[in-house]
Length: 109
Length: 115
Image (tube, rainbow over all chains, first blue to last red; front, side, top):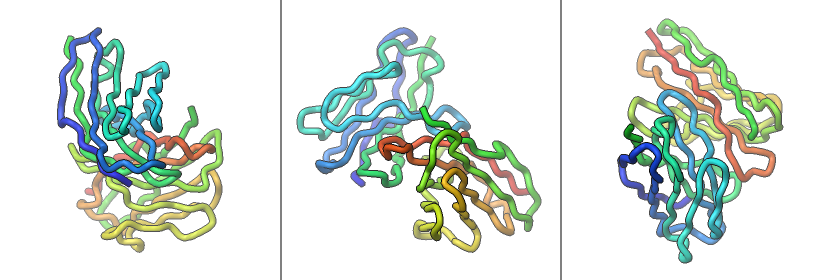
């Protein structure tokens, strides 16, 4: 599976949109982009995934560039409960998820 | 979404004893489950892939005799840490693929402390 690059940390004001970037320049055609987050001392929580079209669900939006080499996870109205480590992962099929170092998002009151 | 339950959430054991951690898919069948280990302030590291009805596949550097994995049914995989030592203290997490294999769902994790 391709590797991803994320900034190690970000801050976001409560109520504002949090935009978390991810580079995956070596992604191959059959690999999906997945986002998970991990709140301290808990298992990772699935957020969203996509192949090439932008996706939206009740938690977040996923914007994937046309060349698929990067993506952005958007939390439209960040709350204090969104403070977590966010992992961007590319994955093909049912293979295991390779976790990089992720981005530690801190939502500030 | 699908639910994966991991038990126990926290365990303390003495050096030399064995500890069993269970991972159950509650509302779906999982032919494949994954076991991860996480050290403080570090990311998850894959230990092994557990396949129902067959032997687990271990990642390089993970001792299969130390970390015994059994996946006897489509809803249960177990990880047994044998002859535990303090350096085995860690956060262990399992995951299972959903029925469509497009999502992986994670258990709550087990914090193991070996004293």
